[in-house]
Length: 254
Ligand SMILES: [Zn+2]
Image (cartoon, rainbow, N blue to C red; front, side, top):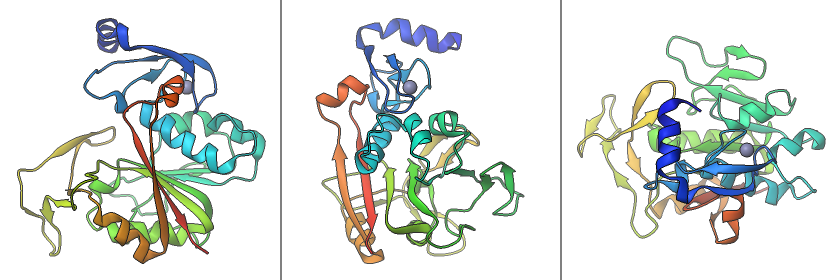
């Protein structure tokens, strides 16, 4: 753990928890690095997953439901295919050598579809290069608020999912309001309707948030053919270091 993170871990020691990680499967300590965002912290000592990563893992495991207690256990399942729209995260760390695991990132100047490493490629989420009906699961965490035309992205994920497959995702969300549109993207150029909001991004440093999704998202997903539910973290989830988190589970109906 880097020195600055060690300092945060010491300052927040009262909020650390011991439990079992749904990503790496190990009995571990979840380190609280920021009391203001349990969702993005509670970092697993071994796989460096945050609470929201483990919540996504829990949602996938609840669907696979064949004895797998962690994402790492999927190696033994062999027949589950997952596409993660991020790379170099905890899922990639535990599934790097799993034949059914694919990941991507977007790099300016690289043609979409270009392979960066085995089963990792450059992808534009609005125009994926994967064939139809390729995956059992697609995972995206805090990605779609940064997609300029999210409907195109959701339709692409629908296309590459197998019938009965799931898009498991997180986004900042207003459960009591419609979508807050921050940027008008109907033309070629962005027109800012609100002061620009940028989020941290591991590849680009910061990245523009085009919107904060709200309840109309459910109708949008339904119109594409998804049936969507939301899993909210519960008291029991604390044993897996999952706090203050919600995960969307969209099923591609047959
Ligand atoms: Zn872990």
